[in-house]
Image 1: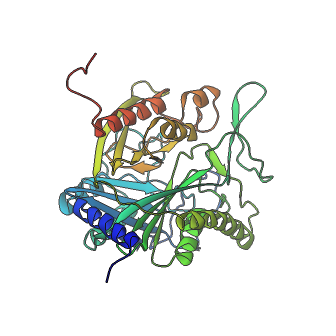
Image 2: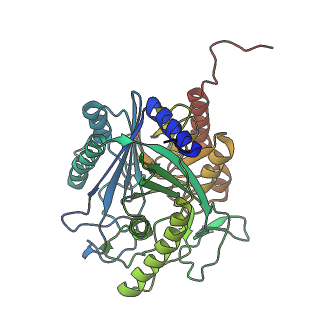
Length: 431
């Protein structure tokens, strides 16, 4: 019996992928706090400790392996994350040297780290870790270990879509200075945003999707300061809907450069039923676009699978207190020579994301904001120069990092990307 040429070609391509050794593993664990405590974000929240849980919080792990190189991406329904201990444990005990901890930045998560400006964005203190951090470190480690122990032959594909569900909350006033618009209940699409979302599709040898990683840049603050229940906000709805529509796939969410981008759908009535319905609407709209895009992505085997990375801790001055320093750990990842990830902790503004996408000359430049990876602390807001000059919330108010740090971080990512691509030589080239 003679096989069709198309099937023969597909088998040959798959064999090529196997030879290159691309493998993946996925796992998840619930990280909803076992006790009710203070909630993340919103200095004006009146309810005090959480009163319950609306929807569960998860940590979801994706481990990728090519030859001897291994990478773990963990998406988290948390406001922020800093864990040098977890980074060391995963490297030493699991043999995974690169760990990206990507927080969705939901403001309905537990509060367990010091806010930026009181230590989290500065050189890390040596005090005892909060109990909740210790609890989730163990859970996250277990999920990564499970993913690493259940690897399958895999290939990757990336799809793109566009959906403007956010607005730029920094509105320029007549005096040339920006002021934040937090409660845009009229859903006016103020200012510049990056409406693009990307979907990283991880599929197995049967072409079945095993993981779908959505990247989008919009604050997870549909639920406002009147909400007193733990919730993953719209990214939780997005992931649940995608998993319901595409059974067998683990849906994950990575926040982008959302420091100045708020959702057009804001739940601010103070009525629990009505407010969570708004959150459901926002997540459902994004999920519809993601599902449509995910179904069109066709993962192609690379000529040779590879995972390359470079991590470093950059030291910047404090914007207001000149005798203090802000340490920022960044990681640049290049997968298959085509997918370039720039991982930045804290809250980078959207222009840093668009700069990376414009300048990283690879087919798929991905910007991972709110992502802890290689030491340092949580630097809070990281504005671009122009936005910092205009001021406003996240541009000068509530910032701690020195002016120009955003562009300096992106330059380092580009330098590392060119190095991973073998473009820096030891000697000058031909004249």
